[in-house]
Length: 315
Image (cartoon, rainbow, N blue to C red; front, side):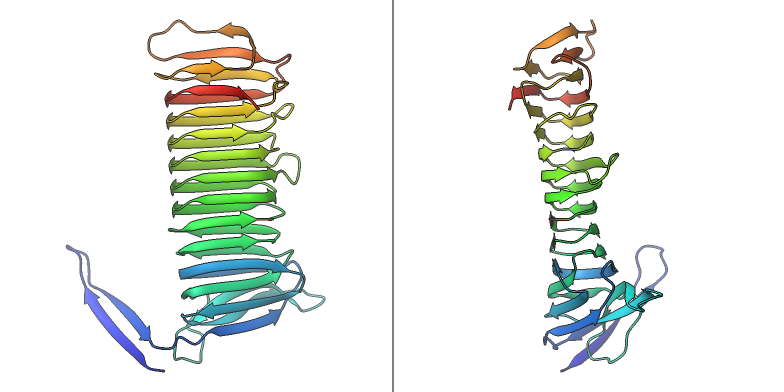
């Protein structure tokens, strides 16, 4: 193994000079480590670069594998007082060529970064990544600068942020907060774990597609993109869908009911389901209406687009 160390001194404008140390290594041997942990372990990790895969398995053990990057190690932050098994483990990197930890929280990098974790684990990762897949864990918190994020079979809630990339969630439950700056959001077959769980999704530039959601409180907002919802309207549910530039399409059962508030600016409105008590304010600045959908007003639907159409279709 050959290690090169390069120190770069630079300044920008009137800012003071800063020093950056860059380590280059020809060490491409995979790094693998494992540790026995508590079944409900909390796992934190920073990733500077790499394709990340996290899979739940039926072992009270963490196995970490990195190929084409730095070495991997574990920092135990907290233990179970009774069993002494780790309750909080931070997955950290070693600088290639050194046999000591370069600091807690050191980011991992590599071509592939894989973690096998207990099914009841909570995952908390941040940094940069090319693509991230999280499957079969209890909770997940992911915040990256770029890259697509995929979740499947997460049992008790998701928080996800990527500034450049798509967010996709399937077959999961619990409170959800999904955000991307440039990218699409897709959620399929997701539901609350507890009463009061909220589903929130927001993108600055992208479309939002929601199918088979069972949340009583659902929010979807896009600055520039369409919003599509397919599924049943929950009794007493509150739905807030808004976009500045895009269409809003709801494909819902004919038996759906609720109070509808629709604002569609310079766009159009169309409903295949019958509406009652339709009221259209007389104003030239924007187009809007309020109406009763179905037989009662158990649910509330607030739909708003500045430049686009609002369509309600029979599922």
